[in-house]
Amino acid sequence: MNSGTFVKVANRKDITDSQMREVQVEGQNVCIANIEGKYYAINNTCSHEGGPLADGKLEGYEVECPWHQSKFDVRTGDVKAPPATKPQAIYQIKIEGDDIMIRLDSGKEEGKQLGKGAESSEYSLLLQERQAFEGTDILTLRFSKQEQDGPKRLFEYIAGQFAFFDIGNVHNDPKGPIRHFTIASSPTEDFMLISTRIRDSPYKKRLDSLPHGTVVKVRGPEGKFTLHEDYSRPAVFLSGGIGVTPFRSMIKYATDKNLPVRIIMFDSNKNKQNILYKTDFDNCTKINKNLRIIHTITDEEPTGEEWKGEKGRIDAAMLKKYLQPAEFENSIFYICGPPGMVNAMQEILDKNLQVPSERIKVEEFTGY
Image (tube, rainbow, N blue to C red):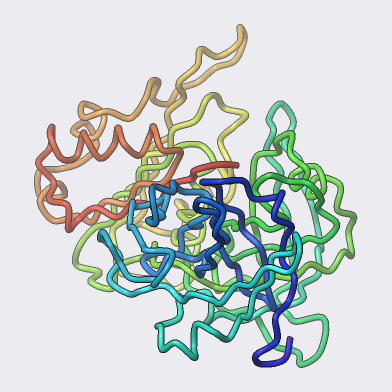
C-alpha cells in the first residue's frame, strides 16, 4: 500500500454497533471499532505486552486490553488506564458506500507513537512438521526459522515471546483471519515451535489441515513475558494447560545456555495425556541441576493408570511444600494459563503468600 493510500479492510455490516474487529493491513494488525455508527481504527497490539485489543471490551470510546486491562481511547490512542504507558497508533478511516477504508500511515502523520506491532517484521516460514497428541485436542506445529521468500533472514526472538500467524484462506472467523501464539521453542533451537488446542473455528480448522510444506506469514516477535536478568533471584513458573508454552522456551534456553538461575515450575493439567513437552522437560531436568518441575493433574486417572505425581490444582499448600521461605521472599513468579487459573494464582500469591505485585509476571491465554 502506497503512503497516503486508503485501502478497504471491511464492510460496514461486518462490524455492528459497539463491536470491534481485527483486520490486517500491510502486515500490521488493526482494531476497527464501531461506536454509534462511526468507525475508528487503532493499532490492535497493546503497547504494554502485546495483547489483542479487538478481543477486549469496548465501553464508550475506551477499549480495554483482555490481557492486563490497559485502556486506550480509540479516537486518540491515548492511555486511559495502566499498566500501559505508551499510546497506541491510530489511523484515518473513511467510508465509501458500505466499504470501510483505512490509511495506515495516518498514525505517523498525526504524531502518535506506534504500538509495538509496527516495529515487528513479517516473515514467510515453512511448516516442517505437525504432531497431534492422542487423547487430547493439542496440536503442535514446527516451522523453519529461515525466511522462505526474499532475503534469507532468521526469525529471531527472546524466550517467552509470541508472534502472529497468518495461515491464509481463513474465512468468516469472528476473531479474524490471524492468531497470535507463544513461541514454545528456544532461540537456541533451529526451528520454531507452537502448540495450541484445536477448536471448532474457521482458523483452527484451517490450522489443523495445513499440509507439510505450507508457507505461512509470521509477524513478530512481540511480548515482554520473558526471563528476568537478575539470576540471583529464582524463577517460579505457575502453568495451567497450554499455558506451559512460554515456559518450555525459557527452560530450554536456560538449560542450553547453562544460565545460573534456579527455576521451579508447577505444571497443572487435566491428566497425564495433556502434559505437554514432558519428554523435553525430563531431558532438561537431567542436564540442568538448577531446574525442578512439579507436575500435578486435576482429574482422576482411568483405572489402570498409575500416577505418582501431585494431584489437584496448584494451591498455597502445594507451593509451601516445594518452596523454601527464602524462595517466597526472593523469587520472581510467572503465571501463564487461562484467565480463571491466572486469577486464582494471583489471589493465592497476593492474599495467602503476600508476594508483592512487582515480583509477579502474568500472561493470560484468553482463547484458544
